Amino acid sequence: MRFRNYIVFVLLLAWGVNVEAQKDSIPTKEVSQLYQPKKVVYNPLSPSKAAFYSAVLPGAGQIYNNRYWWQLPLIYGGMASSVYFFIDNSNQYDRVRTAFRRRKAGLSDEFNTPELTLSDEALESAQRQFRQNRDLSLLTTVLIYVLQIVEASVTAHLLQFDDSDDLSLTPTTIPPNAFSVDNDTPKIGLTLKYSF
Image (cartoon, rainbow, N blue to C red; front, side, top):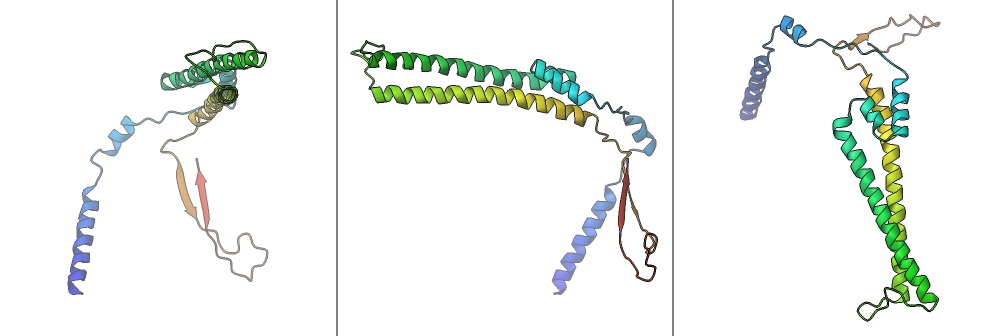
């Protein structure tokens, strides 16, 4: 038991020394000179402008928000790849569908050769798969388009958010009968007031 108390005492002493050792080495005047918080003027139309620009031209809202250096490659890369896969799957779907229709009409098709022979079920399955991939590619393109509009609007909102050190939190106590009509009953509570 004494050994445990000794260990706890040494740990608390070491922690207290560590906390004491972590003082700020920069004087207060230098900190205020280094950090000058910028005053953000709130513009209520900024998010709607960014969303409108992004809706007209994908990525224009990101340019409006000055966040284009890493977001534009993602937007255009994602949209270009999904459009590429949409076109490729659409072409493959048309190719397999034409072959299936020719086969049902009794004509020869490109998938019924001595080197390559696909059954009717395989052609139907390929049509379903290519159509599903085509639709998924279209959905991905639309989703990227909508997400970049939402992202531009949200970023425009957040750029106007005040994140300076001027925010304060002041706990306040209210006398028990300040807002009470019934003065006989004591009231206990805590009010948290914040201002920015």
